[in-house]
Length: 553
Image (cartoon, rainbow, N blue to C red; front, side, top):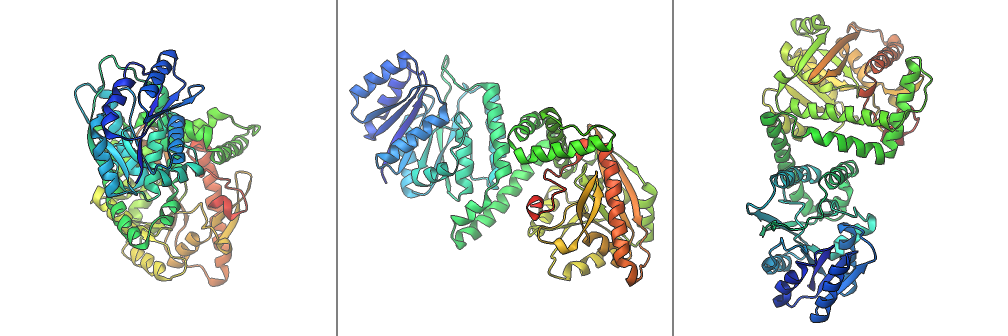
Protein backbone atom coordinates (compact mmCIF):
# COMPACT_ATOMS: atom_id res chain seq x y z
CA UNK A 1 0.00 0.00 0.00
CA UNK A 2 1.40 3.38 -1.06
CA UNK A 3 -0.71 6.26 0.31
CA UNK A 4 -0.49 10.00 -0.19
CA UNK A 5 -2.47 13.06 0.88
CA UNK A 6 -4.47 15.19 -1.55
CA UNK A 7 -5.83 18.68 -0.89
CA UNK A 8 -8.00 20.58 -3.38
CA UNK A 9 -7.75 24.34 -2.83
CA UNK A 10 -9.39 27.50 -4.10
CA UNK A 11 -8.47 30.76 -2.35
CA UNK A 12 -7.55 29.55 1.13
CA UNK A 13 -4.26 31.39 1.55
CA UNK A 14 -4.87 32.01 5.28
CA UNK A 15 -5.33 28.36 6.28
CA UNK A 16 -3.40 26.12 3.87
CA UNK A 17 -0.05 26.68 5.59
CA UNK A 18 -1.38 25.46 8.93
CA UNK A 19 -3.02 22.44 7.30
CA UNK A 20 0.22 21.43 5.55
CA UNK A 21 2.30 21.92 8.71
CA UNK A 22 -0.08 19.60 10.60
CA UNK A 23 0.71 16.85 8.07
CA UNK A 24 4.50 17.10 8.28
CA UNK A 25 4.98 14.42 10.93
CA UNK A 26 3.29 11.72 8.83
CA UNK A 27 6.01 11.75 6.12
CA UNK A 28 3.46 11.26 3.33
CA UNK A 29 3.66 12.70 -0.18
CA UNK A 30 1.13 15.54 -0.47
CA UNK A 31 -0.48 16.65 -3.72
CA UNK A 32 -2.18 20.05 -3.60
CA UNK A 33 -4.38 20.92 -6.58
CA UNK A 34 -4.72 24.68 -6.98
CA UNK A 35 -8.08 25.09 -8.69
CA UNK A 36 -7.51 28.53 -10.23
CA UNK A 37 -6.84 30.45 -6.99
CA UNK A 38 -6.01 34.14 -6.82
CA UNK A 39 -2.58 35.68 -6.44
CA UNK A 40 -2.39 35.45 -2.62
CA UNK A 41 -3.04 31.71 -2.56
CA UNK A 42 -0.71 31.06 -5.50
CA UNK A 43 2.09 32.88 -3.68
CA UNK A 44 1.45 30.95 -0.47
CA UNK A 45 1.53 27.64 -2.34
CA UNK A 46 4.84 28.56 -3.95
CA UNK A 47 6.31 29.18 -0.49
CA UNK A 48 4.92 25.89 0.82
CA UNK A 49 6.26 23.90 -2.13
CA UNK A 50 9.69 25.48 -1.73
CA UNK A 51 9.72 24.76 2.00
CA UNK A 52 8.51 21.12 1.91
CA UNK A 53 10.07 18.63 -0.48
CA UNK A 54 7.18 16.19 0.05
CA UNK A 55 4.61 18.70 -1.28
CA UNK A 56 3.74 18.90 -4.98
CA UNK A 57 1.45 21.63 -6.31
CA UNK A 58 -0.58 20.97 -9.47
CA UNK A 59 -2.37 23.94 -10.98
CA UNK A 60 -5.53 24.51 -12.98
CA UNK A 61 -5.42 27.63 -15.15
CA UNK A 62 -8.97 28.48 -14.09
CA UNK A 63 -11.48 27.45 -11.44
CA UNK A 64 -12.99 24.17 -12.64
CA UNK A 65 -14.64 23.04 -9.40
CA UNK A 66 -13.98 20.71 -6.50
CA UNK A 67 -14.79 17.55 -8.44
CA UNK A 68 -12.41 18.45 -11.26
CA UNK A 69 -9.66 19.23 -8.73
CA UNK A 70 -10.11 15.87 -6.99
CA UNK A 71 -9.99 13.97 -10.28
CA UNK A 72 -6.71 15.73 -11.07
CA UNK A 73 -5.39 14.75 -7.64
CA UNK A 74 -6.37 11.09 -8.08
CA UNK A 75 -4.78 10.81 -11.52
CA UNK A 76 -1.64 12.62 -10.43
CA UNK A 77 -1.33 10.27 -7.45
CA UNK A 78 -1.78 7.20 -9.65
CA UNK A 79 0.88 8.54 -11.98
CA UNK A 80 3.26 8.72 -9.00
CA UNK A 81 2.61 5.05 -8.19
CA UNK A 82 0.22 5.66 -5.27
CA UNK A 83 -2.51 3.16 -4.38
CA UNK A 84 -4.57 5.23 -1.91
CA UNK A 85 -5.36 8.92 -1.44
CA UNK A 86 -6.28 10.48 1.88
CA UNK A 87 -8.11 13.68 0.97
CA UNK A 88 -8.97 16.56 3.25
CA UNK A 89 -9.97 20.19 2.83
CA UNK A 90 -7.75 23.26 2.76
CA UNK A 91 -9.86 25.40 5.10
CA UNK A 92 -8.75 23.70 8.33
CA UNK A 93 -12.12 22.20 9.25
CA UNK A 94 -10.76 18.63 9.26
CA UNK A 95 -8.65 17.17 12.07
CA UNK A 96 -5.40 16.27 10.30
CA UNK A 97 -4.32 14.42 13.44
CA UNK A 98 -6.79 11.68 12.44
CA UNK A 99 -4.94 10.83 9.20
CA UNK A 100 -3.29 7.79 10.88
CA UNK A 101 -6.75 6.41 11.74
CA UNK A 102 -7.72 6.51 8.06
CA UNK A 103 -4.45 4.85 7.03
CA UNK A 104 -4.87 2.13 9.65
CA UNK A 105 -8.37 1.36 8.39
CA UNK A 106 -7.16 1.30 4.78
CA UNK A 107 -4.31 -1.07 5.62
CA UNK A 108 -6.75 -3.41 7.35
CA UNK A 109 -9.14 -3.24 4.34
CA UNK A 110 -7.17 -2.09 1.27
CA UNK A 111 -10.26 -2.52 -0.92
CA UNK A 112 -12.47 -0.32 1.27
CA UNK A 113 -13.65 3.25 1.00
CA UNK A 114 -12.80 4.88 4.31
CA UNK A 115 -15.20 7.74 5.07
CA UNK A 116 -15.02 10.34 7.77
CA UNK A 117 -18.09 10.50 10.00
CA UNK A 118 -18.18 14.09 11.26
CA UNK A 119 -18.43 14.77 14.97
CA UNK A 120 -19.59 18.38 14.96
CA UNK A 121 -19.27 21.02 17.63
CA UNK A 122 -21.66 23.94 18.08
CA UNK A 123 -20.12 25.79 15.14
CA UNK A 124 -22.05 23.88 12.47
CA UNK A 125 -24.97 25.83 10.93
CA UNK A 126 -28.27 24.04 11.59
CA UNK A 127 -29.27 23.96 7.92
CA UNK A 128 -26.06 22.11 7.04
CA UNK A 129 -26.60 19.56 9.78
CA UNK A 130 -30.12 18.68 8.63
CA UNK A 131 -29.06 18.79 4.98
CA UNK A 132 -26.44 16.16 5.73
CA UNK A 133 -29.01 13.97 7.48
CA UNK A 134 -31.28 14.16 4.45
CA UNK A 135 -28.38 13.28 2.14
CA UNK A 136 -27.60 10.30 4.32
CA UNK A 137 -31.12 8.90 3.94
CA UNK A 138 -31.10 9.51 0.18
CA UNK A 139 -27.80 7.66 -0.20
CA UNK A 140 -29.20 4.76 1.84
CA UNK A 141 -32.06 4.54 -0.64
CA UNK A 142 -29.76 4.96 -3.66
CA UNK A 143 -27.43 2.16 -2.53
CA UNK A 144 -29.91 -0.14 -0.72
CA UNK A 145 -27.47 -0.05 2.17
CA UNK A 146 -26.98 1.79 5.44
CA UNK A 147 -23.19 1.43 5.25
CA UNK A 148 -22.57 5.13 4.57
CA UNK A 149 -22.78 7.38 7.62
CA UNK A 150 -21.99 10.67 5.83
CA UNK A 151 -21.70 10.93 2.02
CA UNK A 152 -20.63 14.60 2.06
CA UNK A 153 -17.59 14.61 4.35
CA UNK A 154 -14.48 15.55 2.37
CA UNK A 155 -12.15 13.72 4.78
CA UNK A 156 -11.79 10.22 3.34
CA UNK A 157 -9.36 7.61 2.03
CA UNK A 158 -9.92 6.54 -1.57
CA UNK A 159 -8.77 3.22 -3.11
CA UNK A 160 -7.40 4.51 -6.40
CA UNK A 161 -7.68 1.51 -8.73
CA UNK A 162 -11.45 1.01 -8.52
CA UNK A 163 -12.06 4.77 -8.31
CA UNK A 164 -10.16 5.53 -11.52
CA UNK A 165 -11.89 2.61 -13.22
CA UNK A 166 -15.28 4.15 -12.40
CA UNK A 167 -14.11 7.59 -13.51
CA UNK A 168 -13.24 6.13 -16.91
CA UNK A 169 -16.88 5.10 -17.29
CA UNK A 170 -18.17 8.52 -16.22
CA UNK A 171 -16.26 11.52 -14.93
CA UNK A 172 -18.87 12.59 -12.40
CA UNK A 173 -19.74 16.14 -11.41
CA UNK A 174 -17.20 18.94 -11.47
CA UNK A 175 -18.25 20.66 -8.27
CA UNK A 176 -19.69 19.85 -4.86
CA UNK A 177 -21.80 17.03 -6.30
CA UNK A 178 -18.68 14.96 -6.98
CA UNK A 179 -18.18 13.68 -3.41
CA UNK A 180 -21.63 12.10 -2.84
CA UNK A 181 -21.77 10.77 -6.41
CA UNK A 182 -18.45 8.99 -6.00
CA UNK A 183 -19.61 7.42 -2.74
CA UNK A 184 -22.80 6.07 -4.35
CA UNK A 185 -20.96 4.70 -7.37
CA UNK A 186 -18.28 3.02 -5.26
CA UNK A 187 -20.85 1.37 -3.00
CA UNK A 188 -22.85 0.19 -6.01
CA UNK A 189 -19.62 -1.25 -7.45
CA UNK A 190 -19.30 -3.44 -4.39
CA UNK A 191 -16.64 -1.46 -2.52
CA UNK A 192 -16.98 -1.99 1.26
CA UNK A 193 -17.25 1.07 3.51
CA UNK A 194 -15.44 1.82 6.75
CA UNK A 195 -16.60 4.84 8.77
CA UNK A 196 -14.15 6.74 10.98
CA UNK A 197 -15.50 9.29 13.51
CA UNK A 198 -13.57 12.54 13.18
CA UNK A 199 -14.00 16.03 14.60
CA UNK A 200 -15.16 18.65 12.11
CA UNK A 201 -15.49 22.32 12.92
CA UNK A 202 -16.63 25.41 11.04
CA UNK A 203 -14.15 28.16 12.01
CA UNK A 204 -15.67 31.55 12.76
CA UNK A 205 -15.11 33.81 9.78
CA UNK A 206 -14.02 30.85 7.64
CA UNK A 207 -14.44 30.96 3.86
CA UNK A 208 -16.89 28.48 2.35
CA UNK A 209 -17.23 27.94 -1.39
CA UNK A 210 -20.46 25.98 -0.96
CA UNK A 211 -23.21 27.92 -2.75
CA UNK A 212 -26.33 27.11 -0.82
CA UNK A 213 -28.93 27.21 -3.61
CA UNK A 214 -26.86 26.27 -6.64
CA UNK A 215 -24.89 23.44 -5.04
CA UNK A 216 -27.92 21.96 -3.26
CA UNK A 217 -29.81 21.93 -6.56
CA UNK A 218 -26.82 20.34 -8.25
CA UNK A 219 -26.57 17.64 -5.57
CA UNK A 220 -30.33 16.96 -5.73
CA UNK A 221 -30.10 16.61 -9.52
CA UNK A 222 -27.17 14.22 -9.11
CA UNK A 223 -29.20 12.04 -6.75
CA UNK A 224 -32.02 11.99 -9.30
CA UNK A 225 -29.67 11.08 -12.15
CA UNK A 226 -28.11 8.25 -10.17
CA UNK A 227 -31.54 6.96 -9.17
CA UNK A 228 -32.41 6.73 -12.88
CA UNK A 229 -29.15 4.98 -13.74
CA UNK A 230 -29.14 2.46 -10.84
CA UNK A 231 -26.30 0.35 -12.29
CA UNK A 232 -26.90 -2.79 -10.25
CA UNK A 233 -25.10 -4.82 -12.91
CA UNK A 234 -21.80 -3.22 -11.92
CA UNK A 235 -22.32 -4.59 -8.46
CA UNK A 236 -22.81 -8.13 -9.62
CA UNK A 237 -19.68 -8.04 -11.80
CA UNK A 238 -17.45 -7.12 -8.89
CA UNK A 239 -18.66 -9.65 -6.31
CA UNK A 240 -17.94 -13.26 -5.63
CA UNK A 241 -21.00 -15.53 -5.13
CA UNK A 242 -20.41 -15.61 -1.38
CA UNK A 243 -20.14 -11.84 -1.13
CA UNK A 244 -23.24 -11.52 -3.27
CA UNK A 245 -25.17 -13.59 -0.71
CA UNK A 246 -23.84 -11.42 2.10
CA UNK A 247 -24.76 -8.27 0.19
CA UNK A 248 -28.28 -9.51 -0.53
CA UNK A 249 -28.88 -10.05 3.16
CA UNK A 250 -27.40 -6.68 4.09
CA UNK A 251 -29.18 -4.79 1.33
CA UNK A 252 -32.58 -6.17 2.35
CA UNK A 253 -31.99 -4.99 5.91
CA UNK A 254 -30.58 -1.66 4.75
CA UNK A 255 -33.23 -0.82 2.19
CA UNK A 256 -35.99 -1.79 4.61
CA UNK A 257 -34.45 0.36 7.33
CA UNK A 258 -34.09 3.32 4.96
CA UNK A 259 -37.68 2.94 3.78
CA UNK A 260 -38.89 2.71 7.36
CA UNK A 261 -36.94 5.85 8.24
CA UNK A 262 -38.49 7.74 5.33
CA UNK A 263 -41.96 6.54 6.31
CA UNK A 264 -41.26 7.48 9.94
CA UNK A 265 -40.35 10.98 8.77
CA UNK A 266 -43.60 11.30 6.84
CA UNK A 267 -45.64 9.97 9.75
CA UNK A 268 -44.17 12.57 12.11
CA UNK A 269 -43.88 15.58 9.83
CA UNK A 270 -45.97 14.82 6.75
CA UNK A 271 -44.52 15.19 3.27
CA UNK A 272 -43.40 18.79 3.79
CA UNK A 273 -39.70 18.03 4.51
CA UNK A 274 -39.41 16.12 1.22
CA UNK A 275 -41.51 18.42 -0.96
CA UNK A 276 -38.61 20.87 -1.67
CA UNK A 277 -36.85 17.99 -3.45
CA UNK A 278 -39.63 17.61 -6.02
CA UNK A 279 -38.79 20.72 -8.04
CA UNK A 280 -35.07 19.98 -8.61
CA UNK A 281 -35.81 16.33 -9.37
CA UNK A 282 -38.46 17.31 -11.93
CA UNK A 283 -36.09 19.91 -13.37
CA UNK A 284 -33.34 17.35 -13.73
CA UNK A 285 -35.60 14.89 -15.56
CA UNK A 286 -36.75 17.69 -17.83
CA UNK A 287 -33.24 18.79 -18.75
CA UNK A 288 -31.27 15.57 -18.81
CA UNK A 289 -33.59 12.55 -19.14
CA UNK A 290 -33.77 13.02 -22.89
CA UNK A 291 -35.72 9.89 -23.84
CA UNK A 292 -38.22 10.38 -21.05
CA UNK A 293 -38.68 14.03 -22.03
CA UNK A 294 -39.23 13.15 -25.68
CA UNK A 295 -41.77 10.51 -24.67
CA UNK A 296 -43.50 13.05 -22.44
CA UNK A 297 -43.69 15.62 -25.23
CA UNK A 298 -44.90 13.09 -27.79
CA UNK A 299 -47.65 11.95 -25.42
CA UNK A 300 -48.67 15.52 -24.57
CA UNK A 301 -48.90 16.33 -28.29
CA UNK A 302 -51.27 13.37 -28.76
CA UNK A 303 -53.35 14.56 -25.82
CA UNK A 304 -53.55 18.03 -27.37
CA UNK A 305 -54.86 16.54 -30.62
CA UNK A 306 -57.35 14.35 -28.72
CA UNK A 307 -58.69 17.49 -27.03
CA UNK A 308 -59.14 19.26 -30.37
CA UNK A 309 -55.83 21.11 -30.49
CA UNK A 310 -53.23 21.27 -33.24
CA UNK A 311 -50.91 18.73 -31.62
CA UNK A 312 -48.05 21.21 -31.52
CA UNK A 313 -44.84 20.00 -29.88
CA UNK A 314 -44.89 20.92 -26.15
CA UNK A 315 -41.90 22.71 -24.64
CA UNK A 316 -39.78 22.24 -21.55
CA UNK A 317 -42.37 23.90 -19.33
CA UNK A 318 -45.01 21.28 -20.15
CA UNK A 319 -42.57 18.40 -19.62
CA UNK A 320 -41.46 19.89 -16.31
CA UNK A 321 -45.09 20.00 -15.14
CA UNK A 322 -45.48 16.38 -16.28
CA UNK A 323 -42.46 15.18 -14.28
CA UNK A 324 -43.46 17.27 -11.27
CA UNK A 325 -46.90 15.64 -11.29
CA UNK A 326 -45.19 12.25 -11.22
CA UNK A 327 -43.05 13.31 -8.25
CA UNK A 328 -46.16 14.47 -6.35
CA UNK A 329 -47.84 11.10 -6.82
CA UNK A 330 -44.70 9.26 -5.68
CA UNK A 331 -44.61 11.36 -2.51
CA UNK A 332 -48.27 10.53 -1.90
CA UNK A 333 -47.40 6.87 -2.32
CA UNK A 334 -44.85 7.08 0.49
CA UNK A 335 -47.46 8.74 2.70
CA UNK A 336 -49.87 5.93 1.91
CA UNK A 337 -47.23 3.32 2.73
CA UNK A 338 -46.79 5.04 6.08
CA UNK A 339 -50.40 4.16 6.88
CA UNK A 340 -51.57 7.78 6.68
CA UNK A 341 -54.92 6.86 5.11
CA UNK A 342 -56.76 9.58 6.99
CA UNK A 343 -54.67 12.29 5.31
CA UNK A 344 -56.30 11.53 1.98
CA UNK A 345 -59.72 12.61 0.83
CA UNK A 346 -60.68 9.79 -1.54
CA UNK A 347 -63.95 10.04 -3.45
CA UNK A 348 -65.13 6.72 -4.87
CA UNK A 349 -67.23 6.73 -8.03
CA UNK A 350 -68.89 3.33 -8.26
CA UNK A 351 -69.15 2.55 -4.56
CA UNK A 352 -72.16 0.34 -5.16
CA UNK A 353 -69.98 -1.99 -7.26
CA UNK A 354 -67.48 -2.43 -4.44
CA UNK A 355 -70.32 -3.16 -2.03
CA UNK A 356 -71.75 -5.73 -4.42
CA UNK A 357 -68.40 -7.52 -4.76
CA UNK A 358 -68.02 -7.63 -0.99
CA UNK A 359 -71.51 -8.92 -0.36
CA UNK A 360 -71.41 -11.35 -3.29
CA UNK A 361 -68.25 -13.00 -1.98
CA UNK A 362 -66.99 -13.77 -5.47
CA UNK A 363 -64.16 -11.23 -5.72
CA UNK A 364 -63.23 -9.17 -8.75
CA UNK A 365 -60.38 -8.70 -11.21
CA UNK A 366 -59.35 -5.04 -11.35
CA UNK A 367 -57.20 -3.63 -14.15
CA UNK A 368 -55.49 -0.27 -13.90
CA UNK A 369 -52.78 1.70 -15.66
CA UNK A 370 -49.80 3.94 -15.00
CA UNK A 371 -52.25 6.83 -14.80
CA UNK A 372 -52.74 8.59 -11.49
CA UNK A 373 -52.09 6.39 -8.47
CA UNK A 374 -53.11 2.74 -8.56
CA UNK A 375 -52.11 2.59 -4.87
CA UNK A 376 -55.30 4.46 -3.93
CA UNK A 377 -57.15 1.22 -4.56
CA UNK A 378 -55.83 0.25 -1.13
CA UNK A 379 -57.80 3.05 0.51
CA UNK A 380 -60.99 1.99 -1.25
CA UNK A 381 -60.52 -1.70 -0.46
CA UNK A 382 -59.67 -0.93 3.15
CA UNK A 383 -62.89 1.03 3.62
CA UNK A 384 -64.87 -1.78 2.01
CA UNK A 385 -63.14 -4.46 4.10
CA UNK A 386 -61.81 -6.38 1.08
CA UNK A 387 -58.27 -7.77 0.77
CA UNK A 388 -56.20 -6.77 -2.28
CA UNK A 389 -53.75 -9.02 -4.14
CA UNK A 390 -51.50 -7.17 -6.60
CA UNK A 391 -49.97 -9.11 -9.49
CA UNK A 392 -46.38 -8.13 -10.33
CA UNK A 393 -43.65 -9.37 -12.65
CA UNK A 394 -41.05 -9.38 -9.88
CA UNK A 395 -38.64 -11.78 -8.23
CA UNK A 396 -38.95 -9.82 -5.00
CA UNK A 397 -42.56 -10.52 -4.09
CA UNK A 398 -41.68 -11.92 -0.67
CA UNK A 399 -39.47 -8.94 0.19
CA UNK A 400 -42.15 -6.50 -0.94
CA UNK A 401 -44.74 -8.31 1.18
CA UNK A 402 -42.40 -8.14 4.18
CA UNK A 403 -41.88 -4.43 3.60
CA UNK A 404 -45.65 -3.80 3.43
CA UNK A 405 -46.15 -5.82 6.61
CA UNK A 406 -43.36 -3.95 8.43
CA UNK A 407 -44.59 -0.52 7.34
CA UNK A 408 -48.30 -1.08 7.88
CA UNK A 409 -49.43 -4.43 9.33
CA UNK A 410 -53.06 -3.55 8.61
CA UNK A 411 -52.60 -2.56 4.97
CA UNK A 412 -54.37 -5.67 3.64
CA UNK A 413 -52.23 -5.75 0.49
CA UNK A 414 -50.28 -8.75 -0.78
CA UNK A 415 -48.07 -9.06 -3.86
CA UNK A 416 -48.32 -12.15 -6.06
CA UNK A 417 -45.40 -12.85 -8.37
CA UNK A 418 -46.43 -13.56 -11.96
CA UNK A 419 -44.46 -16.44 -13.45
CA UNK A 420 -45.38 -16.79 -17.15
CA UNK A 421 -43.75 -20.24 -17.26
CA UNK A 422 -45.86 -21.76 -14.49
CA UNK A 423 -49.54 -22.45 -13.86
CA UNK A 424 -48.95 -21.89 -10.18
CA UNK A 425 -49.91 -18.22 -10.42
CA UNK A 426 -53.28 -19.11 -11.93
CA UNK A 427 -54.13 -21.44 -9.04
CA UNK A 428 -53.12 -18.79 -6.52
CA UNK A 429 -55.34 -16.23 -8.25
CA UNK A 430 -58.20 -18.72 -8.21
CA UNK A 431 -57.85 -19.15 -4.45
CA UNK A 432 -57.94 -15.36 -3.99
CA UNK A 433 -61.14 -14.80 -5.97
CA UNK A 434 -62.78 -17.83 -4.34
CA UNK A 435 -62.20 -16.11 -1.00
CA UNK A 436 -63.98 -13.02 -2.34
CA UNK A 437 -60.80 -10.96 -2.62
CA UNK A 438 -59.68 -8.44 -5.22
CA UNK A 439 -56.95 -9.32 -7.70
CA UNK A 440 -55.43 -6.21 -9.25
CA UNK A 441 -52.91 -5.66 -12.04
CA UNK A 442 -51.64 -2.80 -14.19
CA UNK A 443 -52.77 -3.66 -17.70
CA UNK A 444 -51.07 -1.04 -19.86
CA UNK A 445 -47.64 -2.65 -20.26
CA UNK A 446 -46.81 -5.93 -21.92
CA UNK A 447 -43.86 -7.98 -20.74
CA UNK A 448 -40.75 -7.56 -22.97
CA UNK A 449 -40.49 -10.58 -25.22
CA UNK A 450 -44.15 -11.52 -24.74
CA UNK A 451 -45.22 -10.40 -28.21
CA UNK A 452 -47.58 -13.36 -28.81
CA UNK A 453 -49.71 -12.26 -25.85
CA UNK A 454 -50.46 -8.69 -26.85
CA UNK A 455 -53.41 -7.04 -28.54
CA UNK A 456 -53.05 -3.84 -30.52
CA UNK A 457 -55.80 -1.32 -29.86
CA UNK A 458 -56.29 2.27 -30.91
CA UNK A 459 -55.16 4.67 -28.20
CA UNK A 460 -54.78 8.44 -28.54
CA UNK A 461 -54.70 8.36 -32.31
CA UNK A 462 -52.49 5.34 -32.92
CA UNK A 463 -52.24 1.59 -32.36
CA UNK A 464 -50.66 0.62 -29.04
CA UNK A 465 -49.86 -2.74 -27.47
CA UNK A 466 -51.77 -4.01 -24.44
CA UNK A 467 -51.24 -7.33 -22.66
CA UNK A 468 -53.85 -9.97 -23.31
CA UNK A 469 -53.21 -11.87 -20.09
CA UNK A 470 -55.17 -9.87 -17.48
CA UNK A 471 -58.29 -9.78 -19.64
CA UNK A 472 -58.15 -13.48 -20.49
CA UNK A 473 -57.50 -14.43 -16.86
CA UNK A 474 -60.56 -12.55 -15.63
CA UNK A 475 -62.66 -14.26 -18.28
CA UNK A 476 -61.38 -17.73 -17.35
CA UNK A 477 -61.94 -17.05 -13.63
CA UNK A 478 -65.51 -15.93 -14.40
CA UNK A 479 -65.30 -12.88 -12.13
CA UNK A 480 -66.16 -9.26 -12.91
CA UNK A 481 -63.48 -7.35 -14.85
CA UNK A 482 -63.32 -3.83 -13.45
CA UNK A 483 -61.28 -0.89 -14.70
CA UNK A 484 -59.86 1.11 -11.79
CA UNK A 485 -58.42 4.61 -12.20
CA UNK A 486 -57.44 6.98 -9.35
CA UNK A 487 -56.75 10.58 -10.40
CA UNK A 488 -55.12 13.21 -8.20
CA UNK A 489 -57.49 16.18 -8.10
CA UNK A 490 -55.68 18.27 -5.49
CA UNK A 491 -53.32 18.05 -2.52
CA UNK A 492 -54.13 14.77 -0.73
CA UNK A 493 -57.30 14.39 -2.80
CA UNK A 494 -58.07 11.59 -5.27
CA UNK A 495 -61.10 10.56 -7.28
CA UNK A 496 -61.29 6.78 -7.79
CA UNK A 497 -63.38 5.49 -10.69
CA UNK A 498 -64.66 1.92 -10.99
CA UNK A 499 -66.04 0.85 -14.38
CA UNK A 500 -67.18 -2.71 -14.99
CA UNK A 501 -65.92 -3.90 -18.38
CA UNK A 502 -67.36 -7.42 -18.06
CA UNK A 503 -69.71 -9.01 -15.54
CA UNK A 504 -67.92 -12.34 -15.19
CA UNK A 505 -70.52 -14.45 -16.92
CA UNK A 506 -69.13 -17.52 -18.78
CA UNK A 507 -68.02 -17.01 -22.40
CA UNK A 508 -68.22 -19.93 -24.87
CA UNK A 509 -64.80 -21.14 -26.02
CA UNK A 510 -65.42 -20.17 -29.64
CA UNK A 511 -66.15 -16.56 -28.65
CA UNK A 512 -63.30 -16.00 -26.20
CA UNK A 513 -60.73 -14.53 -28.59
CA UNK A 514 -63.28 -11.98 -29.82
CA UNK A 515 -64.39 -11.21 -26.25
CA UNK A 516 -60.83 -10.61 -25.06
CA UNK A 517 -60.16 -8.23 -27.95
CA UNK A 518 -63.36 -6.29 -27.27
CA UNK A 519 -62.45 -5.94 -23.60
CA UNK A 520 -58.96 -4.69 -24.41
CA UNK A 521 -60.41 -2.17 -26.86
CA UNK A 522 -62.91 -0.97 -24.25
CA UNK A 523 -60.09 -0.60 -21.72
CA UNK A 524 -57.99 1.40 -24.22
CA UNK A 525 -60.92 3.65 -25.10
CA UNK A 526 -61.74 4.44 -21.47
CA UNK A 527 -58.05 4.90 -20.67
CA UNK A 528 -57.88 7.53 -23.40
CA UNK A 529 -60.86 9.30 -21.84
CA UNK A 530 -59.24 9.43 -18.41
CA UNK A 531 -55.95 10.63 -19.91
CA UNK A 532 -57.80 13.62 -21.36
CA UNK A 533 -59.24 14.33 -17.90
CA UNK A 534 -55.81 14.35 -16.22
CA UNK A 535 -53.20 14.70 -18.97
CA UNK A 536 -50.23 15.18 -16.65
CA UNK A 537 -50.86 11.96 -14.71
CA UNK A 538 -49.80 9.54 -17.45
CA UNK A 539 -46.57 7.99 -16.17
CA UNK A 540 -45.32 5.80 -19.01
CA UNK A 541 -42.18 7.75 -19.88
CA UNK A 542 -41.26 5.79 -22.99
CA UNK A 543 -42.60 5.66 -26.55
CA UNK A 544 -45.83 3.86 -25.77
CA UNK A 545 -46.70 3.52 -29.46
CA UNK A 546 -43.36 2.09 -30.60
CA UNK A 547 -43.59 -1.42 -32.01
CA UNK A 548 -40.43 -2.64 -30.25
CA UNK A 549 -39.48 -4.54 -27.13
CA UNK A 550 -36.71 -1.97 -26.57
CA UNK A 551 -39.26 0.80 -26.04
CA UNK A 552 -41.10 -1.21 -23.38
CA UNK A 553 -37.86 -2.04 -21.61
